[in-house]
Length: 501
Image (tube, rainbow, N blue to C red; front, side):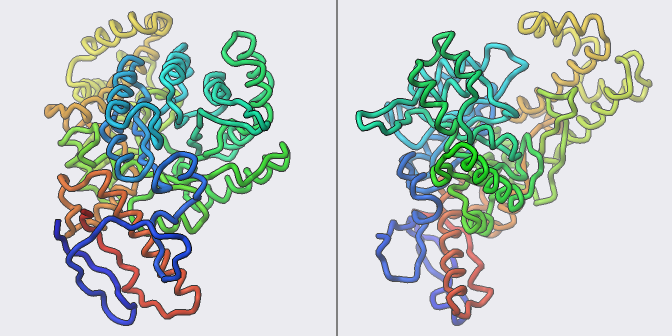
């Protein structure tokens, strides 16, 4: 395909027009030219161990938004891809694994799936880990963990063994997504002895695996999650990354570990080549993208939802209550433009904090609640009640005795369905769509305006990844030349998006 893009040829004048753009080339590391190639960015051990071309992850977006199709497209175009299996039923996850393996082949590298910490759903984590181990899923991105659970330790330890020469082999790799150093430290350190003994006692791992796990990190890949869509602490990338670097040094000194084996990647806010380049310049072993892939053609989000995302600016985001931890006040970052979800969710949270139940609400508050629900409160509660009866009878019993808890469950149902309506493209609930979104989405939209990637149909994970990585390499090369004393004009740092063949 012939396209137009702009690049600087000699940095001595304005950029010139180029007619075609070919895929980024792999260049031998002994090359003496001034170029920097996408394959060189990040930690080379990352790409060697995980089998990807680029130190770039197409991140898992929960409840199947990161579809098997997205994973397949990611792997085939160079990044590593994670399946958004969090929140899906085990049988649905299994079907997704079937689809991925059918396209890539059994045992193919450079892909994995998501394991989300779910203490409120006893047995769910264990069922998913059982599935991953039985199917040979070699990479798991662990998210929403505030502390280690036996199941994530089991997954990590189950892949440990010693070769004949005494070296340690891993066949299960944990990617720990964290936004706090205190959580990262747990994954960087060896697994706690109490958990390992528990796992051995119930036959989940062997004594040899426990012995090895007691001397190596739970995870060798730590993903620093900065200001991102969905669950986020809104952390700035720079301070978070440096915090994890310091944590790594201290943990490795305490446990006599090799700091070079623990790779720290960075995600959150990466939607342009400048953001990608800055992450690699900080020393990120790899980068991870999320929001920008949600608008891709392979996304599990509906076309209506993707159109809303394509119109967003960097400030068109807001915090809203999280469905899974509504009572605790936990929030998620979502798209604000074109929806009422964030506003309605925040008002529900305020009502919950000040009222003892629906009957305690003012007439105006009751009218607001039923307008947002799209039905009477009584009807919404009956549907909530029927669901809880089959999934969590203890929770239902509590709600029957506590009208305030009943109100929370009804609000949680609305928040949950906001994401469901966005995935399914429910036209009548467009203004109630919950679309997880960080500022990277708006930055991406600004960057691609007037380029081929402005059109939704051209936004594939391949085109997004190649543009971000090629652009980051271009900017990194220019910065290196500037650091050597060359006079590089500001206009040279303007990298335009285009279509790769």
